[in-house]
Amino acid sequence: MTAEINIKVVESNNGNDQIFNDQHKKIFDFTFDEKVSGVFDDMVSRSVPFYGEIQRMVCELAADFAVPGTNVYDIGCATGTTLEALHNKVDRSVNFIGLDNSDSMLKKAEEKLALVKAERKCELVLADVHDVLAIENASVITMILVLQFVRPLHRERLVKKLWEGMNKDGCLILVEKLTSSHTNLNRLFIEHYYDYKRRNGYSDTEIFKKREALENVLIPYRPEENIQMLKEAGFRHIDDFFRWYNFTAFIAVK
Image (cartoon, rainbow, N blue to C red):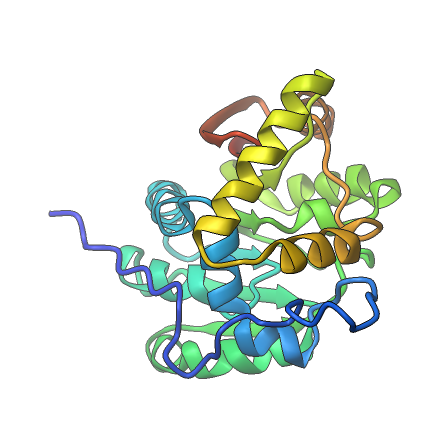
């Protein structure tokens, strides 16, 4: 019998995301600082379409590939949602390693993963994906809405590094925001995405200010660019398993 995956995308101890609701406040580049980490679960659940279902699918696939005695890495683990949800799906001999470049995010993850860390080896590591990551004995690596924040100059090297540290038949699960080479479709996808955010309570001011804050920070690739990058890194099989306008999820098998 398959274990139930319980996805908790909004924690009761986090506040509501109102970071960009002040129209007079100066816009700075978006960073995952203490202010963002305090509302992150609310922010991501209201900003990413079908976020709970994406997490469920990621964990189902991760459990399919996780091998006892190996490592599962969550790169850009944020507040630890994915590792928490995956805990009861895989053998206790599977080690969890969460990496993030935000100390405040890792503090939230520490709180969320207290039970997980009591029952399995689970490390939370402060690390910058632009540096050389120590990846080894990996059967699964997840990157949920993370690669889009990596500077393009470093993406190919990072993906290759992940491939090198992965065991044969291991998988990389990648969730990304995309852009389209078709200008009109790209515009329509973005418009529908903003409508989605309005339905979730964000004002036009908040949408505009966050878009400006992300402009030089989040740089999306086209779907074919991501696929080509994965192929060049050495992955044998690549497929998408989720798509909603300008959001998609890939699984790449070594």
